[in-house]
Length: 174
Image (cartoon, rainbow, N blue to C red; front, side, top):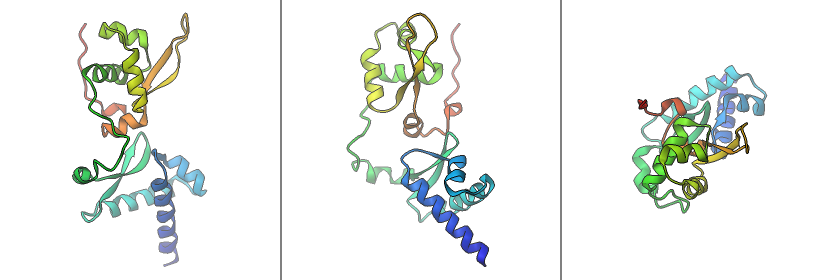
């Protein structure tokens, strides 16, 4: 019986840590914070996942890029959509095209994006960065050391992707 209490306490601690985070929390991070093995974290994560699969729950535990985050169930999106002020408004065609290029080609420079699209991309990059969908991830080791862009965890969350391998497959034109 004592083991069950410990398991419930660990589940509650893991639940609290994930709930308090605004970005996915990895198994390694949970292991470090709680000073327990990654196997113990995994067992407790499985328990939490089962608890939140219940139809009576409004949220569930979702894995993103090797980390875990509590998210609302999709069937409740219509009743909470107006709750947040910082919403991503409808993205323009230019923004969607630029975002797709970054998602599939990252790390990618502004010049590379502009070469693919055939138009300037500076304002679109500012917009995507403002929404937290992309970020500067470093500089390319070439002349001028241009900034390289990549997608963010917010991008994965917004498009409900576990990681970049979940992007739809596209065939590139030669």
